[in-house]
Image (tube, rainbow, N blue to C red; front, side, top):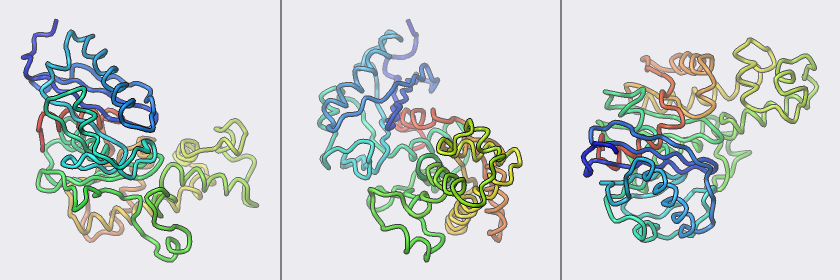
Length: 328
Protein backbone atom coordinates (compact mmCIF):
# COMPACT_ATOMS: atom_id res chain seq x y z
CA UNK A 1 0.00 0.00 0.00
CA UNK A 2 1.48 3.34 -0.98
CA UNK A 3 1.82 5.93 1.77
CA UNK A 4 1.30 9.03 -0.42
CA UNK A 5 -1.26 11.63 0.57
CA UNK A 6 -4.49 10.49 -1.11
CA UNK A 7 -5.21 14.02 -2.35
CA UNK A 8 -1.89 14.23 -4.19
CA UNK A 9 -2.18 11.66 -6.95
CA UNK A 10 -2.40 12.69 -10.61
CA UNK A 11 -2.63 10.77 -13.87
CA UNK A 12 -1.26 11.69 -17.26
CA UNK A 13 -2.34 9.91 -20.44
CA UNK A 14 -0.73 10.32 -23.86
CA UNK A 15 -3.09 8.94 -26.52
CA UNK A 16 -1.41 7.84 -29.73
CA UNK A 17 -2.73 6.27 -32.88
CA UNK A 18 -1.12 2.91 -32.03
CA UNK A 19 0.19 3.24 -28.45
CA UNK A 20 -1.16 4.97 -25.34
CA UNK A 21 1.11 5.79 -22.39
CA UNK A 22 -0.16 6.12 -18.81
CA UNK A 23 1.65 7.94 -15.98
CA UNK A 24 0.67 8.09 -12.30
CA UNK A 25 2.41 10.56 -9.99
CA UNK A 26 2.35 11.00 -6.22
CA UNK A 27 1.88 14.10 -4.12
CA UNK A 28 5.59 14.91 -4.15
CA UNK A 29 5.80 14.62 -7.94
CA UNK A 30 7.41 11.19 -7.93
CA UNK A 31 6.46 8.99 -10.89
CA UNK A 32 4.83 5.90 -9.43
CA UNK A 33 3.94 4.21 -12.70
CA UNK A 34 4.64 4.46 -16.43
CA UNK A 35 2.88 1.87 -18.57
CA UNK A 36 2.17 1.61 -22.29
CA UNK A 37 -0.82 -0.10 -23.88
CA UNK A 38 -1.84 -0.75 -27.47
CA UNK A 39 -4.44 1.84 -28.40
CA UNK A 40 -7.90 0.42 -29.02
CA UNK A 41 -9.16 2.77 -31.72
CA UNK A 42 -12.83 3.70 -32.00
CA UNK A 43 -14.61 6.00 -34.41
CA UNK A 44 -16.57 7.60 -31.58
CA UNK A 45 -15.41 8.97 -28.21
CA UNK A 46 -17.85 6.96 -26.04
CA UNK A 47 -16.38 3.47 -26.56
CA UNK A 48 -12.86 4.90 -26.68
CA UNK A 49 -13.22 6.58 -23.27
CA UNK A 50 -14.76 3.42 -21.83
CA UNK A 51 -11.63 1.53 -22.91
CA UNK A 52 -9.27 4.28 -21.74
CA UNK A 53 -10.71 4.53 -18.24
CA UNK A 54 -10.94 0.76 -17.90
CA UNK A 55 -7.20 0.57 -18.56
CA UNK A 56 -6.51 3.41 -16.14
CA UNK A 57 -8.57 1.78 -13.38
CA UNK A 58 -6.66 -1.48 -13.82
CA UNK A 59 -3.33 0.32 -13.52
CA UNK A 60 -4.51 2.24 -10.45
CA UNK A 61 -5.69 -1.00 -8.86
CA UNK A 62 -2.14 -2.31 -9.12
CA UNK A 63 -1.13 0.61 -6.87
CA UNK A 64 -4.15 0.00 -4.63
CA UNK A 65 -5.70 3.27 -5.80
CA UNK A 66 -9.01 4.27 -7.36
CA UNK A 67 -10.13 6.98 -9.79
CA UNK A 68 -11.69 8.86 -6.88
CA UNK A 69 -8.24 9.27 -5.30
CA UNK A 70 -6.89 11.16 -8.30
CA UNK A 71 -6.79 14.90 -7.83
CA UNK A 72 -6.50 15.47 -11.57
CA UNK A 73 -6.10 13.81 -14.95
CA UNK A 74 -4.36 15.22 -18.02
CA UNK A 75 -4.93 13.70 -21.47
CA UNK A 76 -2.95 14.45 -24.60
CA UNK A 77 -4.30 13.79 -28.08
CA UNK A 78 -2.62 13.65 -31.51
CA UNK A 79 -4.52 16.66 -32.86
CA UNK A 80 -5.74 20.15 -32.03
CA UNK A 81 -7.88 20.45 -28.93
CA UNK A 82 -8.77 23.34 -26.64
CA UNK A 83 -9.00 22.74 -22.92
CA UNK A 84 -11.91 25.21 -22.73
CA UNK A 85 -13.80 23.65 -25.65
CA UNK A 86 -12.97 19.94 -25.71
CA UNK A 87 -13.37 19.59 -29.49
CA UNK A 88 -10.72 17.42 -31.16
CA UNK A 89 -9.80 18.34 -34.75
CA UNK A 90 -6.99 17.54 -37.19
CA UNK A 91 -6.64 14.08 -35.65
CA UNK A 92 -6.76 11.47 -38.42
CA UNK A 93 -5.94 8.70 -35.94
CA UNK A 94 -9.14 9.54 -34.02
CA UNK A 95 -11.73 10.54 -36.65
CA UNK A 96 -14.41 11.64 -34.19
CA UNK A 97 -17.29 14.05 -34.79
CA UNK A 98 -16.33 17.64 -33.97
CA UNK A 99 -18.15 17.68 -30.65
CA UNK A 100 -17.13 18.46 -27.07
CA UNK A 101 -15.73 15.24 -25.57
CA UNK A 102 -15.64 16.51 -21.99
CA UNK A 103 -19.18 15.31 -21.11
CA UNK A 104 -18.17 11.81 -22.24
CA UNK A 105 -15.10 11.91 -20.01
CA UNK A 106 -17.17 13.21 -17.10
CA UNK A 107 -19.19 10.00 -17.10
CA UNK A 108 -16.02 8.33 -15.86
CA UNK A 109 -14.24 11.04 -13.87
CA UNK A 110 -15.43 14.20 -12.06
CA UNK A 111 -12.15 15.75 -10.84
CA UNK A 112 -9.73 18.23 -12.39
CA UNK A 113 -9.35 17.58 -16.12
CA UNK A 114 -6.87 18.99 -18.60
CA UNK A 115 -7.01 18.23 -22.34
CA UNK A 116 -4.25 19.23 -24.73
CA UNK A 117 -2.23 18.46 -27.82
CA UNK A 118 0.28 15.65 -27.32
CA UNK A 119 3.33 17.72 -28.33
CA UNK A 120 2.37 20.54 -25.94
CA UNK A 121 2.33 17.99 -23.15
CA UNK A 122 5.58 16.38 -24.30
CA UNK A 123 7.21 19.80 -23.96
CA UNK A 124 5.78 20.16 -20.45
CA UNK A 125 7.23 16.75 -19.62
CA UNK A 126 10.67 17.79 -20.86
CA UNK A 127 10.43 21.03 -18.87
CA UNK A 128 9.44 19.18 -15.71
CA UNK A 129 11.73 16.16 -15.74
CA UNK A 130 13.66 16.18 -19.01
CA UNK A 131 15.96 18.18 -21.25
CA UNK A 132 14.38 21.61 -20.68
CA UNK A 133 14.35 21.78 -16.87
CA UNK A 134 14.85 25.34 -15.62
CA UNK A 135 14.18 26.93 -19.03
CA UNK A 136 11.51 29.57 -19.70
CA UNK A 137 11.78 29.95 -23.49
CA UNK A 138 11.78 26.62 -25.32
CA UNK A 139 10.86 25.43 -28.79
CA UNK A 140 10.16 21.72 -29.20
CA UNK A 141 10.05 20.04 -32.59
CA UNK A 142 9.02 16.39 -32.86
CA UNK A 143 10.02 14.46 -35.96
CA UNK A 144 8.31 11.13 -36.42
CA UNK A 145 5.66 9.96 -38.86
CA UNK A 146 4.83 13.66 -39.20
CA UNK A 147 6.29 16.82 -37.67
CA UNK A 148 4.82 18.68 -34.71
CA UNK A 149 5.89 21.45 -32.40
CA UNK A 150 5.22 23.33 -29.19
CA UNK A 151 6.43 26.55 -27.56
CA UNK A 152 7.10 27.58 -23.99
CA UNK A 153 7.29 31.38 -23.75
CA UNK A 154 7.95 33.19 -20.46
CA UNK A 155 7.54 29.90 -18.64
CA UNK A 156 4.09 29.10 -20.03
CA UNK A 157 2.84 27.13 -23.00
CA UNK A 158 1.77 29.38 -25.84
CA UNK A 159 -1.39 28.05 -27.52
CA UNK A 160 -2.39 30.65 -30.11
CA UNK A 161 -5.79 31.97 -31.13
CA UNK A 162 -7.28 28.58 -31.97
CA UNK A 163 -5.03 26.23 -29.95
CA UNK A 164 -3.14 25.31 -33.13
CA UNK A 165 0.36 26.53 -32.27
CA UNK A 166 3.02 24.00 -33.21
CA UNK A 167 1.63 22.63 -36.48
CA UNK A 168 5.20 22.81 -37.73
CA UNK A 169 4.65 20.29 -40.51
CA UNK A 170 2.88 23.04 -42.47
CA UNK A 171 5.86 25.39 -42.41
CA UNK A 172 7.04 26.48 -45.86
CA UNK A 173 10.78 26.70 -46.50
CA UNK A 174 10.60 26.46 -50.32
CA UNK A 175 7.53 28.29 -51.60
CA UNK A 176 7.77 27.12 -55.21
CA UNK A 177 8.18 23.51 -54.17
CA UNK A 178 5.34 23.73 -51.68
CA UNK A 179 2.95 25.51 -54.05
CA UNK A 180 3.47 22.99 -56.83
CA UNK A 181 3.10 19.84 -54.73
CA UNK A 182 1.23 20.34 -51.48
CA UNK A 183 -2.35 21.63 -51.13
CA UNK A 184 -3.03 23.04 -47.68
CA UNK A 185 -5.24 20.49 -45.95
CA UNK A 186 -5.52 19.26 -42.38
CA UNK A 187 -5.98 15.76 -43.78
CA UNK A 188 -2.70 15.78 -45.72
CA UNK A 189 0.95 16.11 -44.82
CA UNK A 190 2.21 19.68 -44.93
CA UNK A 191 5.15 20.67 -47.13
CA UNK A 192 7.78 20.39 -44.39
CA UNK A 193 6.74 17.00 -43.03
CA UNK A 194 6.21 15.62 -46.54
CA UNK A 195 9.98 16.00 -47.01
CA UNK A 196 11.56 15.99 -43.55
CA UNK A 197 9.45 13.58 -41.47
CA UNK A 198 10.05 9.87 -41.15
CA UNK A 199 7.41 9.31 -43.82
CA UNK A 200 9.09 11.85 -46.11
CA UNK A 201 12.54 10.31 -45.65
CA UNK A 202 11.13 6.87 -46.39
CA UNK A 203 9.47 8.10 -49.57
CA UNK A 204 12.66 9.82 -50.76
CA UNK A 205 14.70 6.68 -50.09
CA UNK A 206 12.38 4.46 -52.10
CA UNK A 207 12.37 6.88 -55.02
CA UNK A 208 16.17 6.96 -54.96
CA UNK A 209 16.40 3.15 -54.85
CA UNK A 210 14.09 2.89 -57.84
CA UNK A 211 16.16 5.37 -59.86
CA UNK A 212 19.23 5.04 -62.07
CA UNK A 213 21.65 6.20 -59.36
CA UNK A 214 20.79 3.34 -57.01
CA UNK A 215 23.66 1.05 -56.04
CA UNK A 216 23.09 -2.55 -55.14
CA UNK A 217 25.92 -2.45 -52.60
CA UNK A 218 24.32 0.39 -50.63
CA UNK A 219 24.24 -0.12 -46.88
CA UNK A 220 20.55 0.80 -47.12
CA UNK A 221 19.68 -2.42 -48.89
CA UNK A 222 21.78 -4.46 -46.50
CA UNK A 223 19.96 -3.00 -43.48
CA UNK A 224 16.60 -3.75 -45.13
CA UNK A 225 17.48 -7.36 -45.92
CA UNK A 226 18.07 -6.62 -49.58
CA UNK A 227 14.47 -5.53 -50.17
CA UNK A 228 14.21 -2.00 -51.58
CA UNK A 229 10.51 -1.74 -50.72
CA UNK A 230 11.35 -2.42 -47.06
CA UNK A 231 13.76 0.50 -46.69
CA UNK A 232 12.48 3.16 -44.30
CA UNK A 233 13.72 6.21 -42.41
CA UNK A 234 15.39 4.14 -39.70
CA UNK A 235 17.64 2.47 -42.27
CA UNK A 236 18.47 5.80 -43.91
CA UNK A 237 19.45 7.38 -40.60
CA UNK A 238 21.54 4.42 -39.48
CA UNK A 239 23.33 4.16 -42.81
CA UNK A 240 23.94 7.93 -42.90
CA UNK A 241 25.43 7.80 -39.40
CA UNK A 242 27.76 5.06 -40.65
CA UNK A 243 28.88 7.25 -43.56
CA UNK A 244 26.98 5.57 -46.41
CA UNK A 245 27.06 7.97 -49.41
CA UNK A 246 23.60 6.99 -50.68
CA UNK A 247 21.97 7.55 -47.30
CA UNK A 248 23.68 10.91 -46.91
CA UNK A 249 22.49 11.97 -50.34
CA UNK A 250 18.92 10.99 -49.46
CA UNK A 251 18.95 12.69 -46.07
CA UNK A 252 20.40 15.98 -47.36
CA UNK A 253 17.10 17.57 -48.39
CA UNK A 254 15.20 16.55 -45.21
CA UNK A 255 18.02 17.92 -43.04
CA UNK A 256 18.19 21.21 -44.93
CA UNK A 257 14.43 21.76 -44.93
CA UNK A 258 14.10 21.05 -41.21
CA UNK A 259 17.13 23.19 -40.35
CA UNK A 260 15.72 26.10 -42.33
CA UNK A 261 12.36 25.77 -40.55
CA UNK A 262 13.95 25.64 -37.09
CA UNK A 263 16.23 28.57 -37.89
CA UNK A 264 13.26 30.66 -39.03
CA UNK A 265 11.37 29.85 -35.82
CA UNK A 266 14.44 30.47 -33.66
CA UNK A 267 15.23 33.89 -35.14
CA UNK A 268 11.61 34.91 -34.52
CA UNK A 269 11.22 33.49 -30.99
CA UNK A 270 14.79 33.61 -29.60
CA UNK A 271 14.44 30.44 -27.48
CA UNK A 272 16.98 29.35 -24.89
CA UNK A 273 16.75 25.81 -26.20
CA UNK A 274 15.35 23.83 -29.11
CA UNK A 275 14.40 20.30 -28.07
CA UNK A 276 14.25 17.66 -30.80
CA UNK A 277 11.85 14.82 -30.04
CA UNK A 278 10.11 12.01 -31.89
CA UNK A 279 11.34 8.76 -33.36
CA UNK A 280 13.49 10.30 -36.11
CA UNK A 281 15.19 12.71 -33.72
CA UNK A 282 15.86 9.82 -31.33
CA UNK A 283 17.84 7.95 -33.99
CA UNK A 284 21.19 9.09 -32.60
CA UNK A 285 23.73 11.88 -32.26
CA UNK A 286 24.41 12.09 -36.00
CA UNK A 287 20.95 13.50 -36.72
CA UNK A 288 20.98 16.00 -33.84
CA UNK A 289 24.54 17.06 -34.71
CA UNK A 290 23.61 17.69 -38.35
CA UNK A 291 20.52 19.72 -37.45
CA UNK A 292 22.42 21.74 -34.83
CA UNK A 293 25.23 22.65 -37.22
CA UNK A 294 22.92 23.53 -40.10
CA UNK A 295 20.59 25.65 -37.98
CA UNK A 296 23.43 27.65 -36.49
CA UNK A 297 24.90 28.29 -39.95
CA UNK A 298 21.67 30.16 -40.76
CA UNK A 299 21.46 32.22 -37.55
CA UNK A 300 23.15 35.49 -36.55
CA UNK A 301 23.37 34.13 -32.99
CA UNK A 302 23.73 30.51 -31.82
CA UNK A 303 20.86 28.55 -30.29
CA UNK A 304 21.24 25.48 -28.11
CA UNK A 305 19.74 22.38 -29.72
CA UNK A 306 19.51 19.01 -28.02
CA UNK A 307 17.57 15.75 -27.98
CA UNK A 308 14.57 15.09 -25.76
CA UNK A 309 15.44 12.98 -22.73
CA UNK A 310 12.12 11.34 -21.90
CA UNK A 311 11.44 9.72 -25.27
CA UNK A 312 7.92 8.38 -25.70
CA UNK A 313 7.26 8.95 -21.99
CA UNK A 314 7.33 12.76 -22.28
CA UNK A 315 3.67 13.22 -23.25
CA UNK A 316 2.29 11.19 -20.36
CA UNK A 317 4.67 12.82 -17.86
CA UNK A 318 3.69 16.25 -19.17
CA UNK A 319 0.00 15.36 -18.98
CA UNK A 320 0.46 14.51 -15.30
CA UNK A 321 2.25 17.83 -14.79
CA UNK A 322 -0.64 19.67 -16.47
CA UNK A 323 -3.15 17.81 -14.26
CA UNK A 324 -1.22 18.98 -11.21
CA UNK A 325 -0.91 22.54 -12.63
CA UNK A 326 2.88 22.25 -12.59
CA UNK A 327 4.66 24.60 -15.04
CA UNK A 328 1.28 25.78 -16.26
